[in-house]
Structures are given as structure tokens and as C-alpha cells.
Image 1 (tube, rainbow over the protein chains, first blue to last red):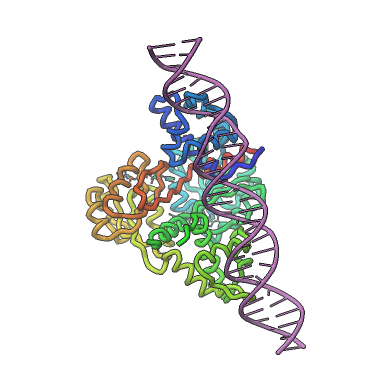
Image 2: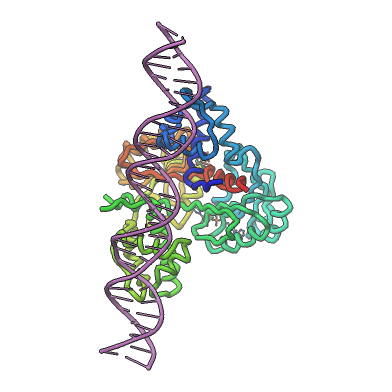
Length: 206
Length: 206
DNA sequence: CGTATCTTGTGAATGATTTCACAAGCTCGG
DNA sequence: CCGAGCTTGTGAAATCATTCACAAGATACG
Ligand SMILES: NC(=O)c1ccc[n+]([C@@H]2O[C@H](COP(=O)([O-])OP(=O)(O)OC[C@H]3O[C@@H](n4cnc5c(N)ncnc54)[C@H](O)[C@@H]3O)[C@@H](O)[C@H]2O)c1
Ligand SMILES: NC(=O)c1ccc[n+]([C@@H]2O[C@H](COP(=O)([O-])OP(=O)(O)OC[C@H]3O[C@@H](n4cnc5c(N)ncnc54)[C@H](O)[C@@H]3O)[C@@H](O)[C@H]2O)c1
């Protein structure tokens, strides 16, 4: 199969969102132009993105909202639920944990870890915060798919190494460091400082 | 001046980080190859990125860490401090507020707003959470440069409209919606769900 | 049924970004 | 001062991503 660019995948996620809105509003069909208008892309872009995976539309009419929803969910692997572990039960970890949207979208947080003895044992909405030492065992037992890393920057690489050794194949990292992972592990970073610096650049360039 | 791509700006931020590490480690000079090795880029990429703004290196030797630090800070507009307002004093807002790194990097949170009467008036580390109604006035008075939006998705567009009307020229949005802003306003999104869906796509494609 | 009007799917064209490749500059050891 | 060994800066080439443009399919309606 062709190589799909990261930006194309991002756009598919966005289309999915717009389709959900349209579906909730009772819309039956939607054109590439309308999808584009909502997402800041062009209609050609939308059609090209979708054509990477098949032809889902009907000429003259557009796309069936429900059908395209199903197709994009399939493409993105969102028909199933993924098991997520959260490492780092600090401020950010706690905000992420209590964010209900993840569950609704198929990402279920099944385990929380922290190294701080004060935090270990605490009950977080049905889950017990576990000690770092249990990580390897629990990640394997629970067959965790995704690890969210929300530990301080200097602990992040160590955590990631262990998480990878425990067989986790994808990681969402919030620590402001560039992590090293083996090729087959998928890594995405959320780096708020980087975004702020991007804004700074934009403000500065006037 | 040439148009600078967003990805180039991102990389500059990363280089800045590596340079800070190198500086802290006492390194005096660094080559494009070393910078690249740390950031997953190629050495040609590093040199090309820097060459968009000038020539800062010395052939045969590399770059002076301290000098390049200064140059990149200047390019990114990080020699000054930016005034930031946080809108939405919920779970995420509170994590962001207490994150010390922003201040250290020149982003000072000078105002916090919320619409919930229970939260308004609370004291957050020296700042008082203010009511939504005061937003327009305070944003102007304090000459806020950047607004961080951490309100629920359905309130986000309304908040952004008001923030823009109050003269704020850049926005960091955490709500999972596509915001509409005028051309001259700089917008960046941090969309955690999108990132998770990207991981899902990667896991699914095996 | 025919024609006017949509909209898709997709090669081809354009534009943007990354990589290559190498001349030219700097350092160091002898 | 010279030559060996680095490393930069940058056009040119290659790759990657987006936009254009249009044939072909679908619908609506007289
Ligand atoms: N708070 C924010 O708003 C924010 C914003 C951007 C980035 N970040 C990044 O997210 C990460 C977490 O930030 P935070 O504010 O939640 O910090 P925090 O200090 O509140 O929480 C970090 C938690 O990680 C735990 N921890 C430390 N080492 C660990 C290990 N080896 N294994 C397991 N747990 C460990 C600590 O005990 C603590 O509970 C940091 O890397 C930070 O830079 C945070
Ligand atoms: N919590 C997370 O980890 C997380 C992760 C990803 C995205 N987000 C997004 O970040 C945003 C905030 O999430 P949260 O978990 O902090 O929610 P939250 O409900 O804890 O906080 C939202 C806050 O915004 C306030 N608010 C509502 N309308 C407002 C308005 N018009 N003006 C000012 N304040 C207003 C509410 O009173 C509340 O205090 C949401 O859009 C959410 O989707 C959160």
C-alpha cells in the first residue's frame, strides 16, 4: 500500500469530526466542498485524501454521511477500543485521566502508574494508581496498546524504554524531550512549549 | 523576507532545546550533524533551516553554542517575555497554570478567566480568577499577547471571537474544534484526540 | 428522453520541502 | 606555511504534497 502522510491522517481525523457533527445535525449527504469548507482544506484535497483508500462518494451527490463515517472509522482503526496506560499521575496526568472524551472515542485508560509512593495506591475513579515496579507486568497482562507519557522530562526516556520493552507499540509523549524509540514503535509528541514558541515566532515576525 | 514553513519553525524550537542542553553540559561548539542526530533530522536540513536567517556557523568548526542560542532566540522572538491569558480554569487550565516551564521560557500567565461563578474570585498562585465579563477590559489593559483557550468545545468559538475583538493576536487552542479566526490572528491547536487517532491509524495499519 | 447542473475521482501540473553534493573556509599538527 | 581533515552554506536535483482541470457518472426536471 502507498505511504500515507501524517498530515493526511490528521485531516481524516478532522473529516471524521465534521461528519459526526453533520450526522448529529441530521445531514444525510455531504460534498467534498462542504467538508473542505469546515476544515480549511480545499475540496480537491478532501477527495484526494479519501481516494487514497477507495472511492466512497457518488458523483453528482457527494458522500453519504453515515457511510463515510464508517469508512473513515475503519481506516483509522476506530471501530475497536484501544487499551491505554497513563504513566505519570501528576497535574497533567490527572487532567488527562478525567477527560471523558477519550473513552467516548475508543481510548480506554486501563492503568495508571506513578513513581511517587505518596500517589501509589490512590484510587482514581475505579483504578488504583500502581507503582512503577509493576509497570512491566501490568502492561503485558493488560495487553496495553498505547502508553501516554506524562512524567517529568528527565524521567521520560527511562519510562519509554521500559514501556517499549513491555511490548507497547505506540506512545503519546507530553514531556518536552525528543524520545528515542525503535522503528516499529509509533511515537507522537504533544509539545505545548513548542507551540507557544511557534506563536512567538509569528508575533515577532511583524 | 521568504516564507518560513511551520515545520522549519518547529525544528528551530527543537534546535534551541538541544543547544540549551549542550550549553548546560558545557559544550562550546556544535556541528549541524550533532544537532541533527539529536533531533532526527539530517545535517543538511539543519544547515538549510539556519541559512534561512543568516550564516551563523564557522566552517571546519561548527556553531558556537552560545551564539547560536542567541540567534535562534532572536529569530523566535524569545528575548522578550510574552503576556499570556488563560481562558478556562478547569482541569486542563489548572495543569497549564501550574506548569512552571512556561514562565521560564518567557511566557507569563498574567490573567485567568472562567465563566463559572464558583471559580471566579478564587486565588490561583497570586492571581485571581476573573469573570468572563471582565475579559475584554483586562485583555486590553494588560496588553495580552497570547490567549490559551481551555474551555469546552462548544464555548471555544465564542471565547475566541471575544479574545480577538479585544486585540489579542495569537491563540493556542486546546478544544477539539476547528476555530475561525481572522487572517492576521495566529492560531495553533493542541488536539490530543487527533494525536491518539493518529496512533490508532498506525497500530491499525499492521 | 434530453439537457442542465451537480459532484466525484484522478492524471497532470504546480508548488513546497528535503536531500544531495561540493566548493570554499577554518583549524591543527608538523 | 602546507596539506589533511573537518564543517559550513547553498545551488541543483529529487522527493513529497497540494492544486488544477476535466471526463464521466449521477440527479432533477421539463
Ligand atoms: N502541567 C502541564 O500543564 C504541562 C504542560 C506541558 C507539558 N507538560 C509535561 O508533562 C509532564 C508532566 O507534567 P506535570 O505538570 O503533570 O508534572 P507533575 O510533576 O505534576 O507530575 C509528574 C508525575 O510523574 C511522576 N513520576 C516521576 N518519575 C516517574 C517515573 N519514572 N515513573 C512514573 N511516574 C513518575 C511524579 O511522581 C509525578 O506524579 C512533564 O514532562 C511536563 O513537562 C506538562
Ligand atoms: N482535560 C484534558 O485532559 C483535556 C485533554 C484534551 C483536550 N481538552 C480540552 O480542553 C478543554 C478544557 O478541558 P477541561 O478538562 O479542563 O474541562 P473542564 O470542564 O475541567 O474546564 C473547562 C472550564 O471552562 C470554563 N468555561 C466554560 N465556558 C466558559 C466561557 N465561555 N468562558 C470562560 N470559561 C468557560 C468552565 O467553567 C470550566 O471551568 C476542553 O475543550 C477539552 O476538550 C482537555
